[in-house]
Length: 140
Image (tube, rainbow, N blue to C red; front, side, top):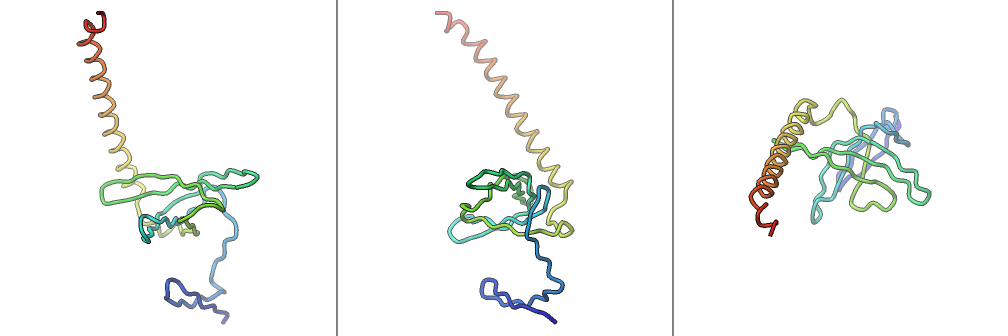
């Protein structure tokens, strides 16, 4: 049996290299886990997917969309991952063990769209009211 001992944050784990999957390349659409430094020395892991690749000559960059999920909201963020990225790491993710449900995320995003649409409608109404009520003021 071919095994290797890997230490993660002081915890030693023995890995069977025969069943270990080593991914050396990423492509658009691959699921990933994104580890991002929040504040101080706290890191949080998020589910994500590679959505693009910018093949810049000096700094090739992967574009990764990840989901910040809570009990009542879902926020999609982009991270641009390259050789100069600080406080960000990525690793392959297994799609079968995603920590969220598609329908729930879509509901949160649709709720957010409705809320922002209401805010937009209210701002348009305020603008129209302003133009109507202050019309005489601006004629002077």
